Amino acid sequence: MSTARTTAARVRRINPSPSTAAAQRVRELKSQGLTILDLTVGEPDFDTPAHVRAAAVRAIEEGETKYTPVNGTPRLRAAIAHKLRLRHGLEYTDAQLTVGGGAKQVIFLALMATLDEGDEVVVPAPYWVSYPDMVLANDGTPVIVPCSEAEGFKLTPRRLRSALTDRTRWVILNTPGNPTGAAYTTDELRALAEVLLEHPGVRVLTDEIYDEIWYADGENRSLAAVEPRLADRVFLTNGVSKTYAMTGWRIGYGAGPADLVTAVSTLQSQISSCPSSVSQAAAAAALTGPQQFVAETVRVYRSRRDTTVKLVNDIPRLSCPSPAGGFYLLVNCADAIGLRTPDGERIENDEQFARYLLDSQQVAVIHGTAYGAPGYFRISYATSTDVLTEACARVAAACAALTPAVSA
Ligand code: PMP
Image 1 (cartoon, rainbow, N blue to C red):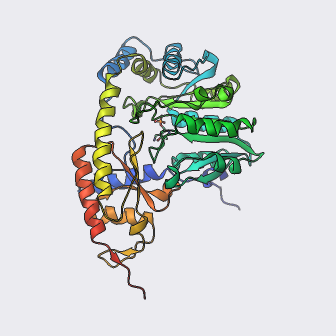
Image 2: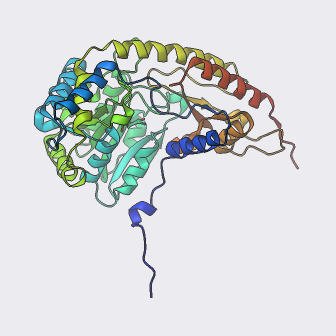
């Protein structure tokens, strides 16, 4: 008698998110009484603004507690359309907007709605951990395109051109990016658009979840606005999680071609019916209400970025560029690989280096290989300057304790 198989191939093809796994490991160590300096967390350390919380309470009291339209409430879709008009000069009709349970769900559904077996999705590396697994879960083939530190961790037109095939369905562009904080300039987007215009069958999924967490002088623009001829091939995704410290509310959105939005809605109607009504009321308040929270938190993130970039670059064997947006640093630790720890163990790769930081100094970071960036690790600076300063001191101590490996 054959034994029951418990999971489908699509599950066996993918891994749990390494950032979620790292967070779990930190929780376990904390529960053992250890004090961990946690630089793994990919979410703001601020509370959701008071007026947003109040809007949610009001929604509960006033009975906004029922299913909403599959695509989101008219109020939230109007708020999203308003934001995209104001921010980028982009016009979207109701039929071109969809709201889901976080940008993560919206991205997943867009891939689910469009990929057939063997369809390729170009994923520039370093990438947000979820993209390759989301593609695999939906029967597609991720085509990872390494983008070096010397290239600013960004896709170049040449690399894009050589990655495109007649099976390419999507190119994913995350700007500002996780884990690098790198952002494409208008000129860089224009140059990529030139290549994309030569390939009319390819769509672009822009993940703009960090769009407001932006420090550079120049404007942070969206591909669809930079090249209007591409607008009907761009699916712009974003959400309220990072900008308004609303990660737990689970509201994200997508804007793009109506046929794609309809397909996403059809899936959503069978998966979740609609996003949470209360969270949608809160998200609408966040997008349309006062925006001081955003300016204030970005000021804080900028100061933490500056402090941490300097501290990291002062540590021998480590280095990182100063990113244009987001709240992450991708730190180059290639010079530490191959060295020996005080316990006599040779550090073979970035994963072991991250493990060494955790075990020897109780500093939790995420190894770069999880993001397609071997030889690096990611720091989230969405935590207090005190924690960042102490963590950098401990990382410096860990690095100072490394010695050259003696060859056998
Ligand atoms: N894209 C990127 C690049 C992210 O870092 C994250 C959150 N870690 C998301 C999307 C998902 O955000 P949400 O909370 O809206 O699902």
